[in-house]
Amino acid sequence: MIDQQVSLRGGAARLPVRPRTGRCLVLAAVFICAACGLVYELELVALASYLIGDSVTQASVVLSVMVFAMGVGSLLAKRLRSRAAVGFGLIEAALALVGGSSAVVLYASFAWIGESRYALVGFSLTIGVLIGAEIPLLMTLIQRVDRQDAGGTVADLFAADYVGALVGGLAFPFLLLPVLGQLTGALFTGAVNAAAGGALVLWVFRRDLTPRSRWLLILVNVAVIAALATVTALVGDFERAARRAVYGDGVRVAVQTGFQEVVLTGAGRSSLDLYLDGRLRVSARDEYRYHEALVHPAMNGPRTRVLILGGGDGLAAREVLRYPDVRSVTLVELDPGVTRLARTDRALSALNAHAYRDPRLTAVNADAFNWLRAAHGSYDVVISDLPDPGISVGTKLYSAEFYGLVAEALAPGGRLVVHGGPPVTRPRTYWTVEASMRAAGLHTRPYRISGRLSDFAAGPDRATHRAQAGQGWGFVLARPVRAPVLRLAPGAPRLRSLTQASLMRAGREAESGRLRGLPPSTLVHPRYWEDR
Image 1 (cartoon, helix red, strand yellow):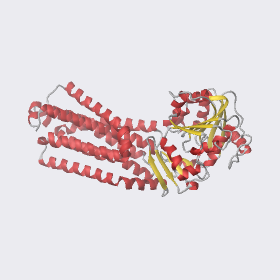
Image 2: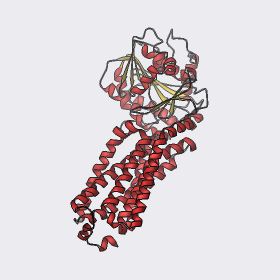
Image 3: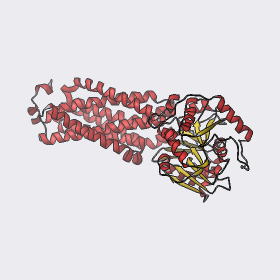
Image 4: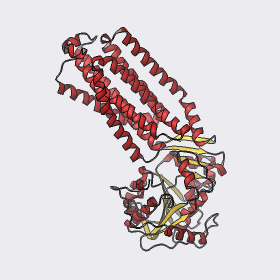
């Protein structure tokens, strides 16, 4: 084998640069390739969490498959050590093409096929194999540059690899995502990957290449970079076409905030749908059923000061502000992009009755958990209008510790109401919410309201939405001292869907499906994905 036959010092003499310079260039290539590899990994995790949901599961799948595949790639690379230069150049070109295009292909498979799990595993496996093949070939190449003991070579390679991974890991959330977005960021990373790998081989190790190998690498790298550049130029049209495939033709606003993708569809107030990270959060056709059931049972009693956790769309605030004796409403929403749309979008602000213009409402953009820990006084009513507990990124907002913080924020006689997910289709999730509230010392009263009026939904949750249509929303009303009574407040405003009789029936229906003996969900032992 060439790399075994030629002495290491003799190999260095064939290079166009001094050994020390060549060594630095190889380590620089290791740094860049490691950064690109981690960007591919994080991009797969982020996109899978958005398209499939449950970030814990998707991260576990991506990481475990990639680590396994890296071991396979290292073994396969042993066959290429005799032609390390050309092998490394081709592997980097393949990695650039596969990793750079992975986000586009994953999103396309979801948008037009409706399924991206198999593509996710395929990309994780392929990218892992290619990344795993890098280090053995780079080990061979760096020893072609300058002789060093094996331990020192491994230490240098892994130091450059780990530092590159750090840079890639920080660049993904703080630079690539906010500046370029997920699709363009992956394509740009692929182009950088191809340029770095190709430049190293075609310059530093060009004398190790036959004319045929040299032209092959040139053509392959030019083709890969040209393909990535072409897709980058078309990515805007692709995103619009994919959104139409996912959400229909009515997409009016699509914004990537610092926290999530926010999409508004529908031409006006009566046809508006709001999606957060692809999941339907508000439908103007039936949102009043949800928000009336969420807010009004909790308003039976003192209600001078009200706290809304989540609910950046302003719809829960709209219902609270219908009570003239409410003096102040504090709304804590993590994403300022949602509150901005709720203020400025004509259809959404009309739907929330311009709640943000009411001087009684104060909006705060903060994490609800951390905000409650700072102790901001006591409230007569706390309304938890947060994302579904089954979305693992929000499980801390459905933990016993979180409800303990809420209980401390309640005034004597205060009430807390929580949306706990669909009690019929996901009963363990719903009753785990209720068990977590009881673990925090709250006395609970569950109730269930019939679900959406329409069976149509777009977005990533369209299949489960159709399955859950009509199955209902589950809520839990709670107090620190004794269980509250399910009753509408005397003098409550006129409601479109909720009556005292229907509210009593909602409590009986929920109790009829009670699951007993479920442990609470805590920060160290979240349990909400057990219902999947």
